[in-house]
Amino acid sequence: MANVTNKKSPIGFWASSSEKHSIIEDVQGVVAGSMLAALGVTMLSAAHMMIGGTAGLGFLLRYSVDISFGAAFFLLNLPFYWLAYKRLGLVFTIKTFSAVALTSVLSGLLPKLIGFSNIEPVTAALFGGLLIGCGMLVLFRHRASLGGFGILALYLQDRFGWRAGFVQLGLDCVVLILSFFVASPFIIACSVLAALALNLTLAINHRTDRYIVR
Image 1 (tube, helix red, strand yellow):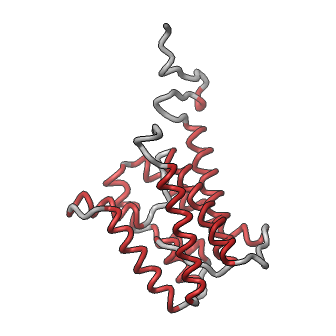
Image 2 (cartoon, helix red, strand yellow):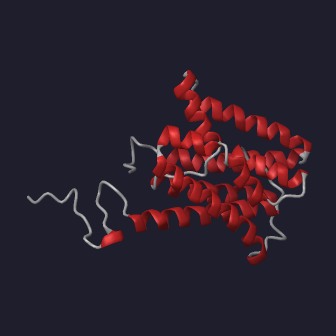
Image 3 (cartoon, one colour):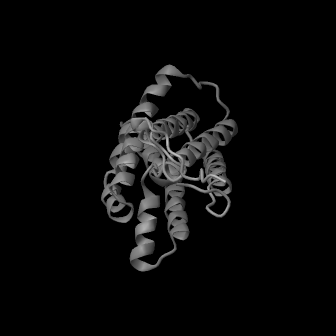
């Protein structure tokens, strides 16, 4: 029987195999993941929602001072790129920088193109969290991310042995606690629901023991 486990497409940028995505496939993945994440952010923002991570800090700044979410999210992620480069390499860092930049730009443009003026908070939480989770899932499949606390958590795990999951959880809790200064308890509860929708999407669909991800 012929071995077809490593068949490649012969056409330039389309060249891919079962072992690695092609350049065009990676570009499509980063763009698609960023679009989904930006749409989710737009839904959460329309309902004045919060979430964990640097996205949550971006929302905090948006609601507290005169700065757009996109600008805040982009600037907050800048310190993490060095850690990304040291921990996960140049290619991952470039893809992640591209995803963060594109998500930041799109999250500023989409409210001008799509209106969610009457969106109900629970609906925004479920669909917004799901969309961001799906966007992150696509990015993970192409060895990219939306930066932020996840990179810091991996670094601290390598450097000090602190478990990345607990570090991320602790940082997310700090963001949500700070949210009480800018949001009502009901909005905080809906924000927790959004975080659950996001993280369950990742937990169920991003498992190396069930799916092969390269």
